[in-house]
Amino acid sequence: MFIVDQGPVVRLCQQYLGGAPNEIEKITGFYADVFLVRIGRLRAVLKCYRLPGQAQQEADGLDVLRQYSHGVIVAEVIAVHTPGEMGEALLMTYVPGIPASHALESPVSIDRFADECTDLLLNWHSVTRPTGFSDLDGAEYADFASSYRVFLANRVMWLQSSLAAQRLGLNLRERIIGLAGQFDLLPVSADTLPTLIHDDCHAANFLVDPDSQRLCGVIDPCHARFAHRDLDLFHLPDVRPDFKLLQTYLAKAPQDDGLQTRLAYFSLFDDIKHAAATHWDDEEWLWRKIDKLETRLAQAPKVIA
Image (cartoon, rainbow, N blue to C red):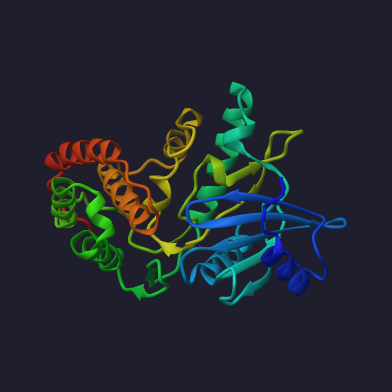
């Protein structure tokens, strides 16, 4: 599929890839427009972001994940383009494959993918460092609670002061702000070391080979960093929950009884992050998450470490 205005894409390809593309296919996402380009036999990906700082963050995340994704392809960075007519952009190598969420239907292929995907995730989560939980902007904190409180403070500030936040009803905003203040009521986590996370690991961001239907690639680690593994786990059911990625992970690596409460909490505030950064605002969806979370919090008197 060709886009209407190819000019900026063509100029970036000429600048960084050495020629004008023969083919351009556009994919529109929440945070970026992605262009799959072909120049002769060369295939590459051009990702143009709507928010500042994300191109370099994703470039850094790709570099880190590649070191610990043995046998699974992670794109290599070709160039990070500074702001211009298309804003910030990242050029990277093309990763062949089809999103698992679109490619797999048979129970055998789904079960095999769940096994391979969670093995990769467990490998990432085995990579730890003694100190330094990173937030979305790269700042580091001595413990996870400190880093997440900063994240929550930014979400609350948006809910309280942004005109865009007013598209969410007042009652909804007040309930969410109240839940932000209950962070210290979350059940304690046994994980005390920062671990490598992808930060958006669901079935659409893992690629499979169209012939073998085996896991072959990983995409879109915009905020891959060292943080808390739960920030990966809550994403696993986001796309194709029938793949049972979270259940497969927990069968291999059982977690504490408070996990589901923490995942419900992190999932809600991840949605608020999306609402602030995009025009997404599904109030019915958010109310369901709030009800689920409040029920869990009522049964969880412990404090997060």
